[in-house]
Image (cartoon, rainbow, N blue to C red):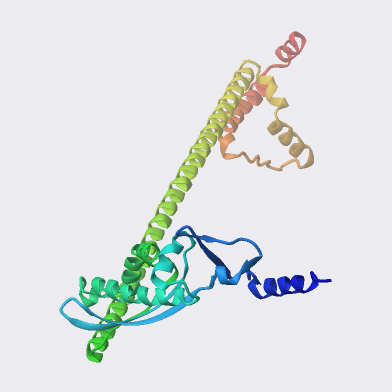
Length: 325
């Protein structure tokens, strides 16, 4: 049983010496002048440094001056954290202690003051802006990693204001005037653009209406040409029919001249015969159309000559003619 007491003492010493590593801790140790990281879950606390791996926030109020020695105040918020790649620089600045990050951040704060003043002195007050200062500090962020072992997680320039309130008010008024001028210019440009768009639309509508009018004119012209062709065709057909009718009438007249007895077969002779049978002393009026006036006059003349010739023919010669016929 003699080994129980040493075993209990060993267990107690181990429990006293070793600690469980939390996820937000960086466990450092030193070996042969070099600093390394312990990755095991348990670590000896007297032979290690449990450095917090969380971020550290700094709120800075920097008094600087713009070109022309105009005093200004720059307000910033900087968040830093321990840089694992340059942990030796962090220990050199902050020491082998849990507050190494805080001490290094204090040193970095002094450097940031100098960088901001260096930047603002190169520009006039109108040329300075929060973005201008921030870009410059981000470009110089390598200084914090190499010299202080800190990574700048975020850097925000909250405000940049002149100390003299009259200057600040003048700047605000000028900025307000500039914004109003830009707004008015944009409004006028919008009006000009709207007017140009309307003019272009009117021109396009005018061109479209002109093209439509030309198409309608072309269609009307084609229709008129087609109607003219049809009218000419109708006239030609009517003239051809009239020629045929005249030719027929001419042939009919020639036939009647050669054979006067055919006058008895004409409708006019039939009408005269009917009138003579119904009324002994009646006079038959034969109406002729204007187109048949000349033809009718010739027929009536021939008819009268024929009747006279028939009346004046002697009986023997009439019988002979009838036998010959």
